[in-house]
Image (cartoon, rainbow, N blue to C red):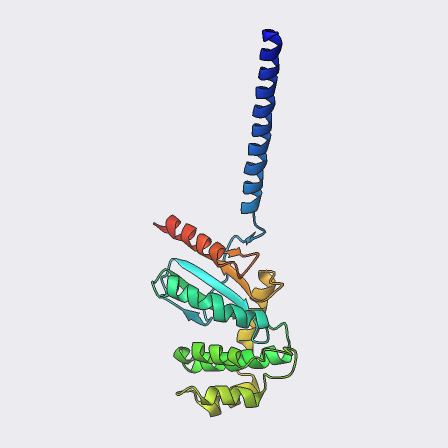
Length: 227
């Protein structure tokens, strides 16, 4: 009788241990899988030469946004993630941030980008104000409606002291800076940009550009490697 009870007890213990092992393995496997991402790793990062860039030139980490002035998600990213990035890293000299024009919405994207490039060439200090204010004019509904016009660009630029409106208009009319857009388009193709915004941290293209914790983890990992 005692033997039978002992055997039953041992059997129950073995089953309990087996169940614990299986459950533990399942938890570990799922935790490991949850850390996996579909980020794309490139063997280099986009050049920031000639691109609108904010932050210290020698900052150890570069973050690049591929964006489109007609893109609602780009506007949302600029209003939510961008300010955090500036406060946490750019203002502290740890990151420089660069913007590459994407022309997915064709004529309006081209017009907005030509205007922004003109402002940048006039004085890079004016660029980010113009960038921000142009995005502000994007309608909250009916995003596909025509809104990037020469009139709207002039309205935005006229509210930023220092921009030469005549030069801006001339640059737009004759497409003075179209080659800058051609350079951007080559970068879009080279880095296989399929959506806007697309965010890269030192050559790593994020699966989810709105995952700020992931952006921070990539930046912090890069910073650790530079020390």
